[in-house]
Image (cartoon, rainbow, N blue to C red; front, side):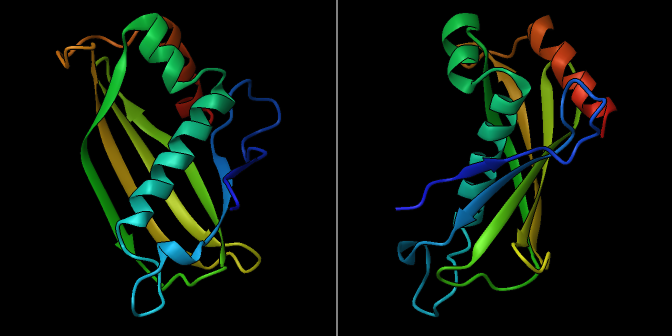
Length: 155
């Protein structure tokens, strides 16, 4: 089974933090529906894969945020606009970036493009509330806020 492969950033080479992460995914047979196209909900899974890889590229992980800092970023809104069908064995680039943020909210943006042609397959966004382990809203710790602000500014 092919897993995600994080590509190098398309951000400015002078920027400390990248503006966009690209993660390459090859469509598996199990991700398709009876019509032979990728089942629509899988796009949201790919958004998550891209988001996790973007955080890694920024220098930390969801696991670190949760275990070390009691900081969870829970999805409160998710949207996807489908532009073209995605088929079994297609290679898809998941382009993920931070759109904007506040102390208790983070907005990510996504593009799914066909590798090789650059055809836009889907675009979307997710909004996340910053919460503690009990899912009570909290302020994003400053160390993450600083990195996120820099990544947004470099976009």
